[in-house]
Length: 235
Image 1 (cartoon, rainbow, N blue to C red):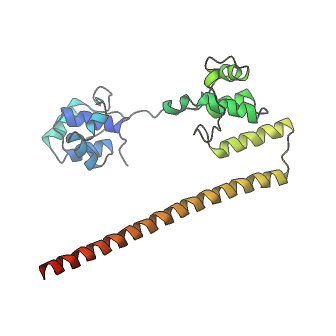
Image 2: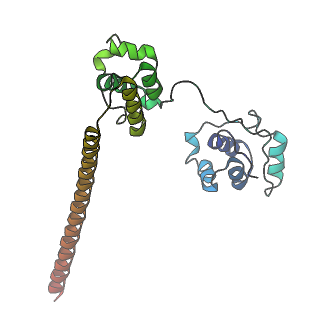
Image 3: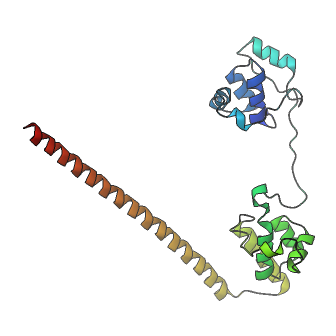
């Protein structure tokens, strides 16, 4: 049975590298990391990115276990107390800090383009509160002058599949049925846009390859010319 790894393997490995005489292999096995990652920490290539985490204080290791490992390089450290996995089941969707400032723009876009979606559904999709949604709707939000409606999918706040499912569910509940023709047209437009994007990428790649080939041909011609001139000079 595979031994569980520390709750914060990189931070734990950084602490073990800095404060113990354990081998890189012992640390990598205990933390579930590649030995080269541990080597990089020891060489100060990666340790600066992590704040060391004491596994003894966390209850994952004991001082006696560390001493056994230091005394015998072939000894494999045993987890004293495995970390408890915490499953997040309630509360709004987690949004990375870097994207939280984009939430109001995504909310404004949904309110403008899909008013049939309830505030509760928007809050669950974007990971926000009803008070924030209400403030954006009635334009009393503290930053309303800087809020620009933007597609939440483009902002990375949700996936296209999640948004489409929510729109379809809200439309059905509100009695708004999208006919097959409109749905097919929308899908056709999306497909056409994707094809155009792929063609543009292909053309750009082709142009880059042709330019590189031409540059190589010119370089070879210049090299041959210089060689010929050098031979004439020697003659």
